[in-house]
Image (tube, rainbow, N blue to C red):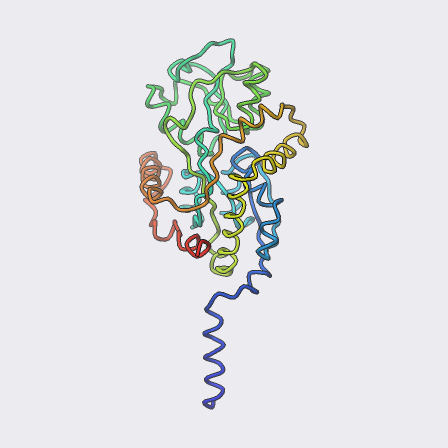
Length: 321
């Protein structure tokens, strides 16, 4: 290789390592999301046009709960998806999944509710009761490992009835379960229809940050696209703050198209319970350390994650630059 060929090759190599907007324009993602309220910011992202403006094409994979998205990602069926801390930690342990941003806090969307006629007021009142629970989900993990034990309830003190969150209101109405651990909008539906009353709100014990996770292969192959993707999220967050009617109408249309019947006023309560603010708050690592210690104690993971590998705030820093 002569000097001119060497310099040309070196220049090409250097260019390949820097930001190249055109490359992000060819990116496509397999986007997973849950059809409860936690996944609705992602649903809105997919319909907002924000991804297209960043040159990203998306194929969507909707499921009832985020832990299913996590399992799809571990199986490399999906590139990106949202779920709360405990599910992410399990996903990292099983499939080296990486958190690229905290998207929202959803503690206000989660409630423990009981059938109205039972007049149950405290977690302790659930002793001996049948409780609908989506096993494997983050809300299930928090209830089983933290909330119930604090109230003096062992796992043998109540009967878990495994089901998806979108089936729980019907089960409560049919009286096949006494209580449920559920998320919005199903809680406001049960409340508005006079089926259930609230025992507790998760916000009191856990603000429940929800993370956008990616497979390590997707990050390795598409680092520029990850930054562009997060730029789209920043635009969506602005809509949640400054264009609430557009956001609410889009999400409301999703549920009415699925046959759910609720007034716009009832639905607005569910939307208001989510706080969309993509970023990487300084306290995230401490929160995740606490969650990991619980999972380690319960023998659900073998070791505490290496947070320098599991949490990647650098992509969001570039997106904000």
